[in-house]
Length: 169
Image (tube, rainbow, N blue to C red; front, top):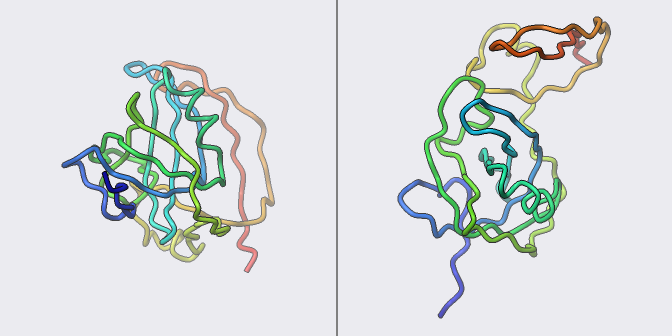
């Protein structure tokens, strides 16, 4: 049987699960929700710089953290694809990846060292030119940082810290 073809992140659509992508995890965080429990959320980038949101449920968390470390290239095979929805989307990709029990993660021969950031300018932020439903990448110098505050978010206590960034350009 011939090897599976390599796909780019921009090609991924929900009409099949047999995708094979070479990606680098550029960011990850754990998330807790009332409905899904704990999950691992990630931003994956391919060699063209295209990014997609990926997640895995609690049952696969340890395996994915071990097999898909930040800044390491991997081949990911066989995953679910669904529409990306909601406020504060992490990428502009129309879909997101769900890593399942059938997903395999292996080493990749791709070795690109770019961080794949899409930095927004302070001007575009201040002018309101950016879509507020998407998170943005920004670099700046912290010039003032407030106290750590405890706030209520959806009935739960969370820690909050406000700070000001200065454009370093």
